Length: 177
Image (cartoon, rainbow, N blue to C red; front, side, top):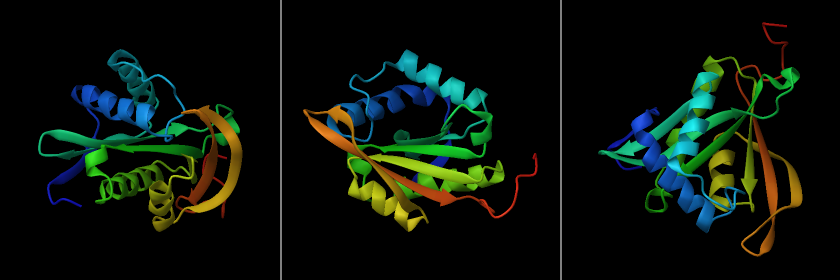
């Protein structure tokens, strides 16, 4: 990883750069199943909604530039799922493969364990090998595959599910019952 990379909480001023990073992912890849990239107003609304609910949202910067971002969201709305979170990580194409994603995911895991979440999942589109390697390296394991779950770029795309325990995982009941 470049020496000058810093991981920190997302600030509202980061949202234009985050919007551009996500737009690249939407148009060029299968990491997002959206077909049209949202504008900065929508991305700001989404960020605010996550942060207001107490979910971590972080960026990786190099110098003054945002080169990646990651966040946690609730996987399902049912209260029983309150200890399960889903991660999302996006890195600019020119900063991929140098440890930025690892720095972001490592920080998300640490933050989520501090918030008493017990399980983290990743839904990886098209079996993205770099994302699979990243998650595998940080203790995730493959737990499922949803074949042909999305149609994008003129083809069917699978969704690979990976999961990692946080803290005690499911070895004990949660403290709030």
